[in-house]
Length: 553
Image 1 (cartoon, rainbow, N blue to C red):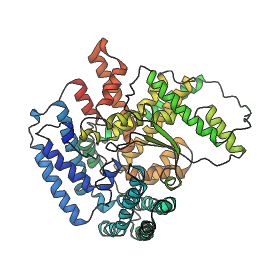
Image 2 (tube, rainbow, N blue to C red):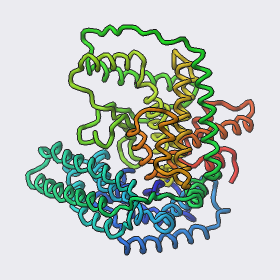
Image 3 (tube, rainbow, N blue to C red):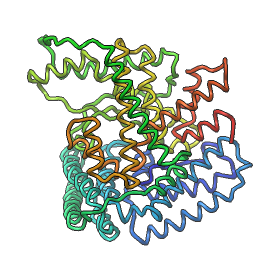
Image 4 (cartoon, helix red, strand yellow):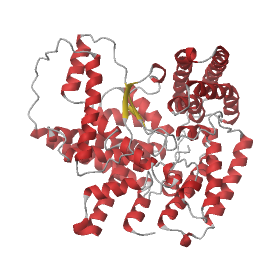
């Protein structure tokens, strides 16, 4: 839902007089509709509000969005420059997305995750974004918590026998969210005055009670047979009109199947080139402990930035901020179980990203010490750092955040964001970064293989070819491992259709555009120039990158 959010302040950024008034109306409708999304992107005008998804509000919003869409498509696009035309297409895609969710897929009636996510993210976004003080965060968090009981009452009125799978995922989120909200209070209670502490405590108790009640309601009102899916027609609609991807679900499925087989063959061939790894006894330094792991991660990230900055691959502009590697705070641990990059919001003052890593034991036992010593010796953090930091998410999103167009600053399509990060994994293998190039290439191909399997599951689930059990069996048969891990993955795919297919499709789109530019620019083609220009246009669909870089419309 609302995966493409546009926000804030066009007056400062020189949008033409043709687009500016209408753009402001569109943006106002979108960020007032999704105040939590606005907070995430660094717009704090709506920090004190939960969304209003009541039937009356949805009907009113749909009418306004349709009217704005009609006015937008009536504009004479021939009068717009290429950059203005990009903003036009992004505005239109965002309106199509919002209208689709209300009218076509009817997510507010079918998807309980809309409501469980909002309960958790309403507070989470307050915690992670810039604020003048802890007190300011606590005031906003308290006001949002106070609104959760009414918000979940609207959820009960809207939902119509939702899918048991989505209900299970929502119940899991609510359970984690209850702990998260309670831990927020414990973490911050001594940072505010007594009256505000009491207000926060009361709001916490009421919010948690309503979330527990809603979880029970979902258990009693779920449909044990139903799997909420888009269907092929709606899947194709979102590809074309929201993500501006000019291929169909069937074509994406063929891509997934092809690359699943191709990567398996390539990995087998490369494995034959490697000698069996020797088993050696690990000799631990006497002073090895958690502090060694923290120091390694920090140094690895510093060396990676230095390597990328000195390469002929991509520029790291001066405005790109630092990355702070932090162990995930206790109140976030349930929401962020693994490594994750939290980039700065496009409209926040801060330029710093936070790289969350799982909390380490205060003291290692022998097995933990051996594992983490090998973790450092084999540089297992490096792959995650490439994808999440340099030249992946942190670099790409930091540059996008600096774009002169606020429309583009606030627009993120995961086909480009995730496609770029996956593209970087293979790019860095070819860069000479790794001592063991073949081993690094196998790891990169494993990443492509996993993303190819995600395509097969995503498309087959959303078009009704796979049921849940089929998808689970496919993943276990393909990769082995724990049923419980893939069960969580598949529930995530069901709650976020198309996103699982975006990694590999986005990477292939970047490869295709690079080949086109190489042919068009001839002897003037330079890989660093290509990457720099690509990143300069923001997190927009590759179709629009192509238009700008090839000089078309």
